[in-house]
Image (cartoon, rainbow, N blue to C red; front, side, top):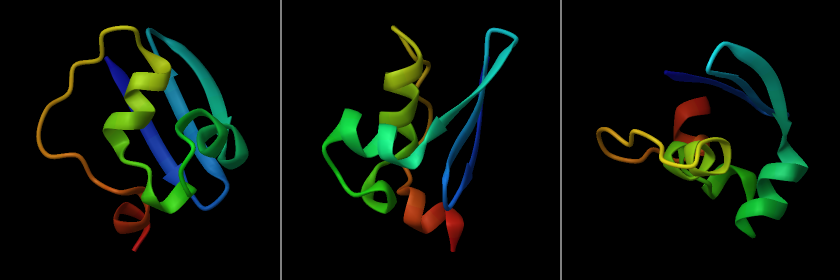
Length: 65
């Protein structure tokens, strides 16, 4: 299972028991979008080869509101 915790500077990730951080600039570079317009599903696709995408994607900007 993958856990994502968003803040204004990036994403704290726990993936298969490993904790790491994706900085805001890295997420923007990987998606070619503004950080706040990136969805949680897009972040999961950065982290995992075959992510388990459940539910509707949510924009980081909406998550942080």
